[in-house]
Length: 414
Image 1: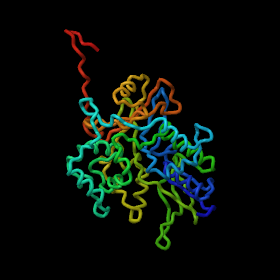
Image 2: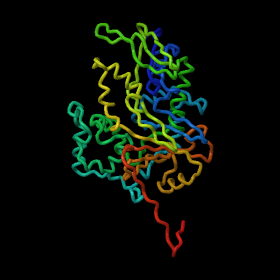
Image 3: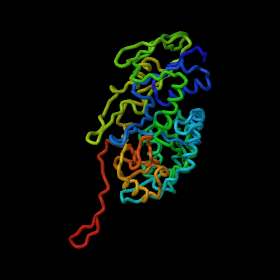
Image 4: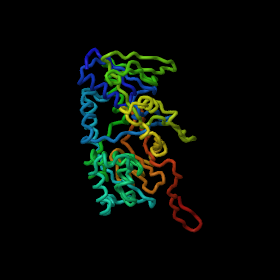
């Protein structure tokens, strides 16, 4: 990569931000030669997080981090200065934080009796073990387009292991067997501690404030152009010697059409298939709107590129059935410590030391997690924030009835 080259990154998620940092740090490309084009008003993609104690906080989710599987992530953040601790990197402050708040979840699964489910045995039968070994040893050619259910018997999906693994990594039974196998291999260390999530490393605040913002701040200081409200709609291109060469980037910027010229020697990187593209936000009075592919800018761009050009892959394999990949998350802002106090007492974990608490008999297969507080830099004392999500939000919901209070004669004690 010549130092005179320009680089354009389509999408402002953590992938593009990291790529820009590596190009500067390891590729010696001047920051002013790099542009990141993001359709949303802010950078960060799926790692968003915002709000205030009055209106409430919101974040679509957070990625699970471990020290044993994210070598590139931590190598990058050894170079990014902390916004909170002068003289330290994001890596330094994260390691120190996790030394103080070690993960050791003691309430991973809760059943309809309001009881913690024992999880140390994983619940495997001999048949489950044999089938899981066969799947994990199968080559990807053999797995092909098969589903997880094609390789594992119905009983496997009632094991404690499946409830914990599927909610940790958002797997549904009909998802790709190839992807499931990849996760079994990549997170082999977590297999042995999935019941406590002892390998998980957490950031001081939510991942937007702790990961995205410091990286974005460093990139801006290097001269990187962070262009928000810029939706890329198409790529002009030519073909030379069988190579696909981008000549222009068509985009809508503040509802005005623009074309960015791409010269010989320049680079264009596309983040395709965002997990939160076409997502919507609900409220206390209305559910999130169900959006379709028509609302999905990133996927539409990938489909245009892949049309007649198989080298760009097959987006239909991933977005042809929204219902099978739909999930719903929620962020709750509290101004009363009662819920946190009771969850601490029930689980045995202080906030920030537990993990996902999954209500295994919930029709929605709902999970929640209580992070260390405060979870936002502007979160005052007396306000708590927790996050949760559901893998099956299209199902009819259910609930655990409130236990009947003790009765003495005609009086009900509350």
